Length: 203
Length: 187
Image 1 (cartoon, rainbow over the protein chains, first blue to last red):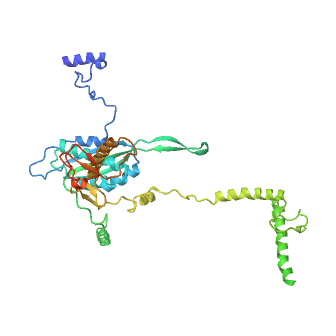
Image 2 (cartoon, one colour; image 1 turned 135 degrees about the vertical axis):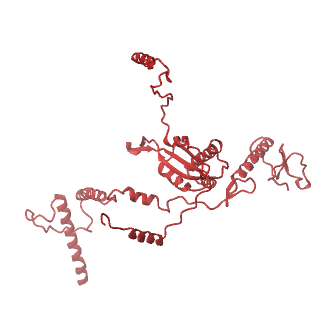
Image 3 (cartoon, rainbow over the protein chains, first blue to last red; image 1 turned 180 degrees about the vertical axis):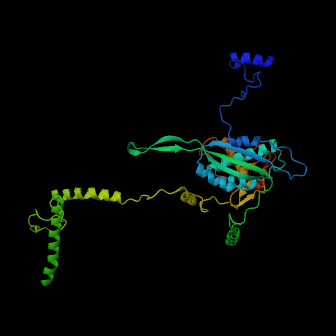
């Protein structure tokens, strides 16, 4: 009660202004980290910590999330490279990107190598080749509008586009590709849908 | 005689009709208007050809004919009728012929172990050769001392501990102060 009285007294004087953050009062929840730049959601995905696995459970494969922001490249063009890489093993992806003529290929190759090194150093991955690309996405960055001069004093407004690139590496060999859906599969699904029909709200 | 007459009369009539059309254009009256028009059949002028007309009428006719042709051209320009929906756009942009193909001609270089395309020299090995060639060229430049001093004989590059053989009798010798690289085979 004495502490509560003291807290009440001092809270009237409002010491938060002249006390450093990380204050004495346990009730005041002042954030100690001062970050004006927002940490993106993809970067935060590396911070999740799972509870320890039980002895009988199968080993959970390591997941590494990495991204690069504000790449000077178009989102639409980056999407083609991200689509190319999806589902490949990391070695195959690096080989394809090395001989691609696109500007974004060089950037994505750097990102993949960084992620590979991060995986080996921090995320307890044993073999650097034993990774495959589970997800690879491109996102739109901040666009800037600029004036483009044409002849006769005419001008157009051009937008300078940037993009982000996100990649998720998972330990293990790449999953086998899905067999393409045949007409037979579609017919089977249709028949199954017909068979699932029942009468509702009846006896 | 009879043939000549038959050929000449349609031409005269054509000329007359054209003149009428020009005059109507000039005055701004088109054939739809009835009445208020004095003698539609004007005197047929004896002119050489149907295209020859006095200059003033010509200019007026051209200028009055040019403006509508410009406007007509603009009206006939191709323009999209409806906005392409994002679904249609996606079908076009994600069609397999627009996606990047997976390259199947990538191999491993047997010399250095880097990746190389089958029909292209290994990039790493080529860079090594380029660096060594650059140093040899610098030695040559030092020996020649200026432009236009290239000798008319062949050049032989010798590395450390190598002596010129009988085959290199009349040739120019360039010395390089390093061990012979494994890929540079001596003849």
